[in-house]
Image 1 (spheres, rainbow, N blue to C red):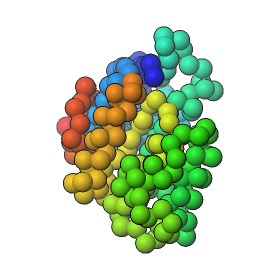
Image 2 (cartoon, rainbow, N blue to C red):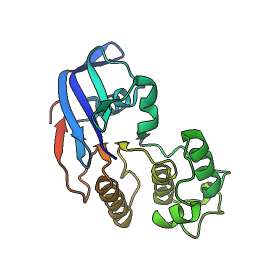
Image 3 (cartoon, rainbow, N blue to C red):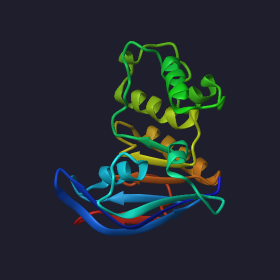
Length: 206
């Protein structure tokens, strides 16, 4: 992976209210950027804009790979956005979720489901319906989405929500592995993770 994401003088609004203006930053391969700020400041909106779900009022968001610009229609294949909700269907088991996510996100082969479940600490729960999962187990399964269809840029909104200390350590390890492979991680956080941060982007008053 050799990717870069650049934000140039970005202005966002939500519901007719301006969230922020003239925001600029860049993320290079191997970097972890954290977004901090009070609730309602625009952290989630920024992630949605980076993912292409929210059009900016002004400014530009650009992606490049190996120095070449990535066209807008190709950007979805380079980005993973994981929201603060797990998005699980209680009647489906863990393997069914992984299969659905891989097909939906265009994963081509990728890691075997058993290996993915083991990586997120759910090796013995693959055949159980997710309605039986604890909040932490549900969050671990949601994190597995990042592994079944690998993409270089991770956009994470409160990724540690519901995780205990061991779960947070797992998340830190996943982020470290992704960075070592040349990936980029941009995460909105309420609390720091056990992972080295390259840059902190403050949204609104702190």
